[in-house]
Length: 268
Image 1: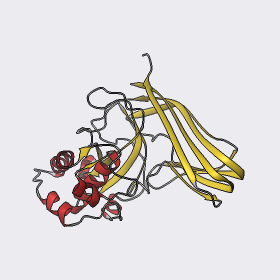
Image 2: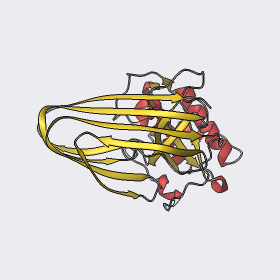
Image 3: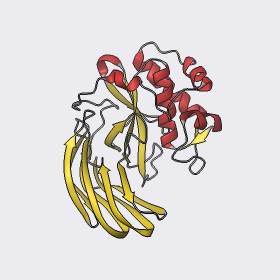
Image 4: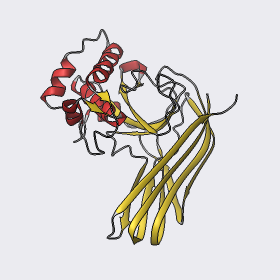
């Protein structure tokens, strides 16, 4: 699938900031399932700093904005070819050992309810177990925007029984780790949901390490494995660790955030 992606994030400040430093994980991953042809990252008033590939294989680059500034815009525009690898992350170079992703975070720590739910899955092998854990999350957490917040934990989302893709990913990661399977959070884009509806927003899912097959993606919110509709950016132990944009602003005013994403299929 040939996709064109535009992503704009606008930060507005009640009082001008003196300085802004950002770390951007906004470059598509390099693996067999996707090939990037054009990719432009711009930060209004920004100075591009050094970039590097971290141990998880993600490309990260730094930007600095020297104030005073009342508004900062991060823009991404690019073209990418994707193909279905049945969710398997083939050809992705990374150096971090999978066992590192058995480590819990505050967002994914399993309480008694998550532990009990994890024990309900009975898989013939690690891959089968991962699929069944993903289905359990989809059954127990209904997709409903606006009911959770960025800081909602997997335990809170399960207790509520509702949430968004971030909550589904955190819950699945929690269940997988409870069953001894390394799991991590993945940020990216989705062209359309499983029913064909356009999905003009950033997206998230989980990856679970299943032995010799390696990392396999699972989108519990859409009850599927990532296919050609998905664009992978980067990963981390949870949403905060895998955030596409992280930064620190020097100033005392309140911050407002506005995000616009468009993912469209191009003519073959």
